[in-house]
Length: 169
Image 1: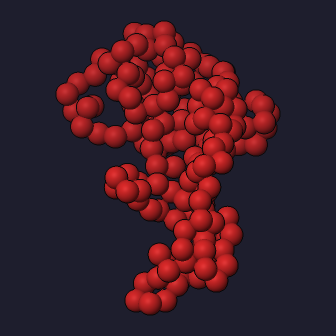
Image 2 (image 1 turned 120 degrees about the vertical axis):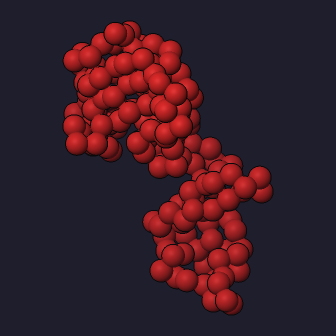
Image 3 (image 1 turned 90 degrees about the vertical axis):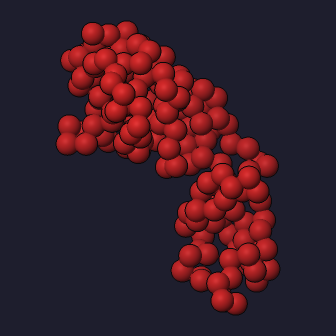
C-alpha cells in the first residue's frame, strides 16, 4: 500500500537544520515512531507531499524550504508585554521570566502560543512568538515503517508530538 489520502502512516526520521549533516533537531526512532493520518491536516502540507506514494520499507530524504515549513521569521511576532502581566499574587516568578525560557500563553482568541523570553527589565518582557523553527530550512531523512487503511479510531487520536507536525512544539 502506498501513502496517500486517509492512509495511516508510521515512520521514523531525523530532522536537521543546516543541511543533511547539520544539527539534529529531532530524532524519532522505532520505540516511539511518528504515526498520523495522511491528509488530516495534522502535519505540514509540504511534509506530506514529499511522502506521498512511498511504501512500507522505503527510505526518504528531502528538504523543506523555510517558507513551506514554519515560515520566515516575523519581526511583528516579537512583542513587549508589561512585566505585571507575569505577576502571580503580586510577585513575578523570575525562574519563569528568564531569558531563554518558553512560556505557554494564549492570545486574545484563546489560541495557545509558546513565547520565548528574549529579554526583560523592570517594566517589560520582550517575547518572541515565532515558531522555534521559523526561518529554518528543514532536512528530513527516515524510513516508512507502516502504511495501512485508516479506521475510525485513527481520527480520534492525535499524532505523536513532532516538529514535523502541527503540534505545540
